[in-house]
Length: 77
Image 1 (tube, one colour):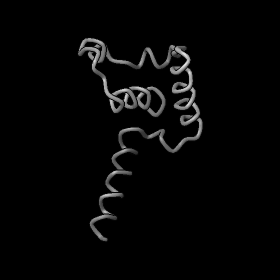
Image 2: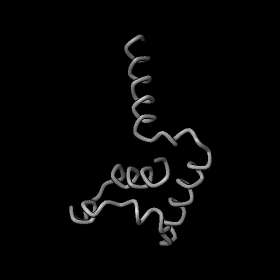
Image 3: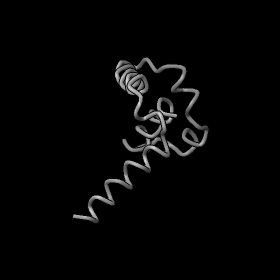
Image 4: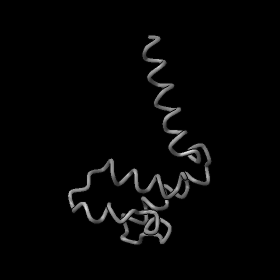
């Protein structure tokens, strides 16, 4: 049980250190807006500018994790 608590604490503190804005509700609204607009093929300029060129160079086989990371970087940093 103690190891599980340390694991959960480590995950949450790692997320907070990576994305300090993760606790702000305004940033979650941004995250949800980008997800909804991407489903409609309307991507925001903010999300496009946050994407690193290496993301495009690496190829087309992008998994869900890398897509979530790009959107989270755009909103939570």
